[in-house]
Length: 323
Ligand code: DGY
Image 1: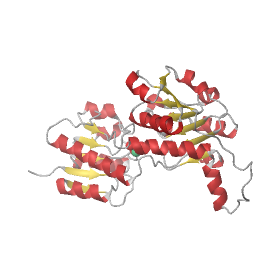
Image 2: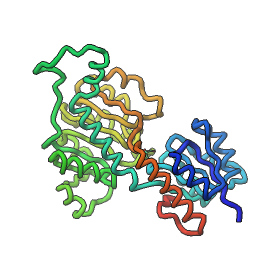
Image 3: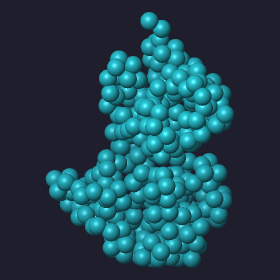
Image 4: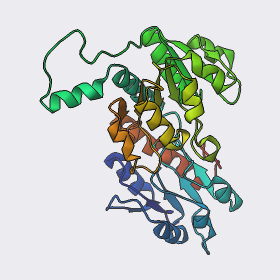
């Protein structure tokens, strides 16, 4: 039997690429440059499976090409708001993602951003590198503690829960959560978390706000100027979810006008072309979408895609089917 023809849209960890080559007839994108929409449309006619990432925009247009051969999009990543799921569904194209395996690392980067923003680590590092450090003094780059503070988490799925564990058990933080559905009390009790129904009722009470909800249109601008106004002046906003969840002009205004204290961002609207005004905000910590970027996790994500492909091509429903 012929092996399924697979397109991998970006370079993956070597071990995973090797494993893929053993099982499938694979085409790799040696340039590692994201495919254009036209290239993607073309690929839909040639491959049984395409393995995209967050850098591939997969709108309705892609599903409108004639003679589509692709039966499964095995997304390398947990978020899939870049794929028009209802268009995929209407054609019976399976879409899978890679949950669980990146929860630890995304939670770790969240805590990295919380600490960096609270302790002004970006400003300090820039000062040392610019050879402008004048030495220790009691008033130099004074930040704020995490220990004992209150963390608000919007979206209490696997990543949100891992953040809560680190913040509560590591830093003694009090946890308030807002989530679309009610959270099982046994999960809340692991971090003594309290669920609040409305975001607006949570915002005035927290010192840190961390976003872990899905991206996409449903959550676009979830945090805008009205929400930022409800937060304490000392509060710090962390976004490791998706750029569209935060309204950029509103956050930039809030950072420049002391509406909130600081922000830590790993994701942006229109990546990698982030709103350049963030660069003028010393109180913004800016990372280049590193949430899942460890060897262990990037390999685990790849092996999870392979598992989904194997299940699909052996006639089973893949464990991580999202459509
Ligand atoms: C994810 O898995 O969604 C990460 O943000 C990388 O795409």
